[in-house]
Length: 146
Image (cartoon, rainbow, N blue to C red; front, side, top):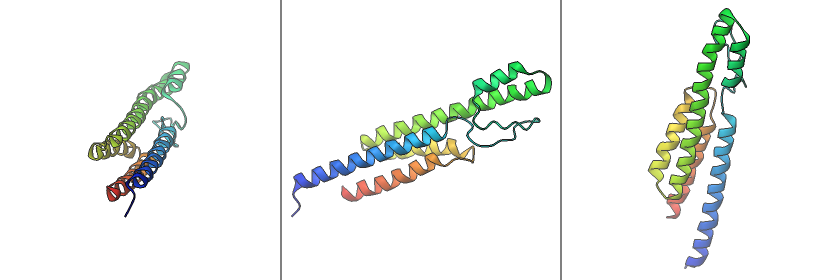
């Protein structure tokens, strides 16, 4: 017969390890996507916006004139959207982790799906996809212990 106290301490330690691993994966996904973190050929000037944030593009817009300034203005708009989507995906993932702590697995899964969907719009990323896959494994292990 399994000692319930030993099982509870094993389950708690295992749960804590999974939670910490999920936090680290979410932080990795968040760090990996904060803006345009991939090569681009944006607009008629074929701007490479990799690593450039909207505030930097705004400075470039102000420092240039004509067609180049217009291209940078469009880049500001697009980069602002990318940065907002990255922040929203990070928020969804953090909410998912909180929901999983309350054993609200369906809510957590839905939130991670939303984070992954935002990320998928850009086609260059897979951090939140990896988080969702790890979450599914965590859920499966949690379900098998319950």
